[in-house]
Amino acid sequence: MARNTEAKPALTRARLIAGSVVFVLIAGLSLYAFQLLEQFLIRDKRFAVSSRESQQALRVSGTTHASLRTIENVFADDYGRSLYLVPMEERLATLRTVDWVRTASIARVWPNRLAVTVTERTPVAFVTLPPSGFALIDAEGVILQPAQDQFNLPVLRGVKTTDSLEELANAVERMSRLLAELGDAAKDIAEIDVAQPENIAISRPYQGRIIKLMLGDRDYAARYQTFLNHVADIDARVPGAKVLDLRLDDRITVVEGADE
Image (cartoon, rainbow, N blue to C red):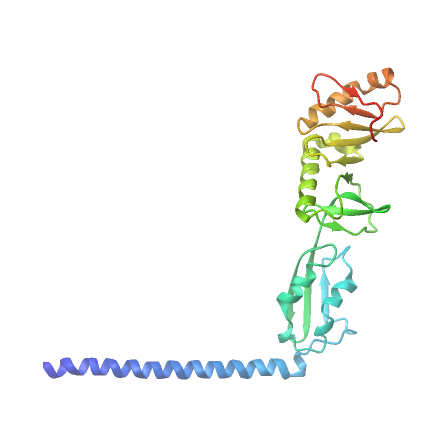
């Protein structure tokens, strides 16, 4: 019995050593095979991204306003390079800086092509740019260059291109909250001024002129409805009034000499 007891540990130890050797051999062979495959993908010309002139080298989908040429330029250094060596994360980071691009994805299409899918930003308002130009802004506060499309959007005032992205996003959020509260009644609003968060103002056309309404920081729908209910009477009493203060719930004040 003693002899059998001593033989089992020795046998187990031999199996462990043999197993370890086999594992090391398999791991080494796997690493060697991977290196061979990697070198094959890097050096074989069949895996080189087609030339820029080839329409098959890069397929871009999802773009309406983003510049196709700018997106193609992101991959300028990859033409003729092995598809395996294209730095995907670096290219993705650059794509996200292209105007109008919100998100993007890149796929390797073997043996030698790239496929890019873009999701564009959605503008929610116009913003003014000095000296006299306009741009667009999305819900995240990102300013977008104008597009050829006809957008039926209000003008957001009270923001500057020098504002931080967080400040711009907060301004858009204030505008969006007001529009959501007004609902269908917001269709006639031309401008929204959020420069003073405690006193958001809107502008809308009326009888051939633009009227500015000071709505404060709450009860936008109720205050705007008050304006609609009484604007004809106000116009009869104070013809040509251009600035109305609706922040007091029991009255409407005509502001004389206010900035339009």
